Image 1 (cartoon, one colour):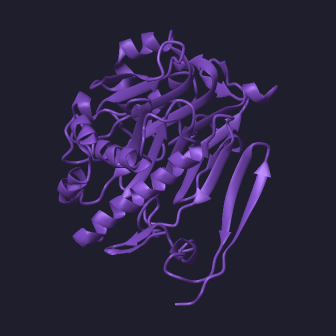
Image 2: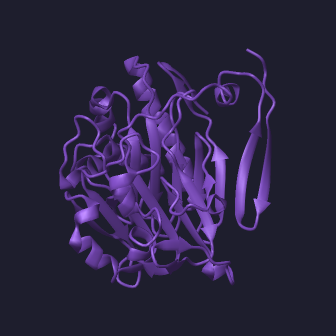
Length: 342
């Protein structure tokens, strides 16, 4: 194996910071080695989600009014081979003048036909939203306890993807948890179990933590899940598009174990406060720092590709309280039962 030499360079545009890594040949840098290899298509059972952080807006401005809104993605997703996400939905938001913990509304009905969601969305305003439409993985129950986002204390969590061989690692995963987190798991999804692992690795969940700390805990969570999966000898990849927030900061990741496989799609947009005209969500130039907004979404909410930046495979994205976006390469790779960790 050849030695590698890394040089980490940052390109700053306003408050956006992206990381690009120049590397030599090694197993750990297999993402670079295989970047030109043909990508296999992502498996079809993938949910859709979005995160919003910025000035307070109506939930309807995110869910219904954009051209490619999350409601539209619930029945006509563009970047999945199967366009339906009809196995329930959930939204979470923060009203910090009332409570530091978020409110969560979930339902088993398809998002496109839920009239309660439509009515609420026109009257719920927040500076931080999480929203998710579900396509249940095979073997996962369709029940309200399995609808995202999941909530624990100040935190919200969503997942788009699957933990490979989850039922084989479920026992050891649960055995690793302290009683408080073990007892907090209400559903049966791999997603909620991954949330518990994240909370354990984050540490004291009562303290305020930075976006960087949440991003680091996300990487550690994926590393731990990949360790357990590697121990099973499974050769299939896991798909981890996770998103987490405490209402102040946000961290998200676009990840797949095998770099020759295309991970589930993920984009982000940094702009001024959204201006909604009819059913098309447009962007306005920010007048000052307080008007900046950041949206992270499984699919672009409008057709203007210049508004959106595609998150590169196996990168972690963080959004600070000041709405600064940072995107960095993760140093975790699993090929079958072989794993390389930071």
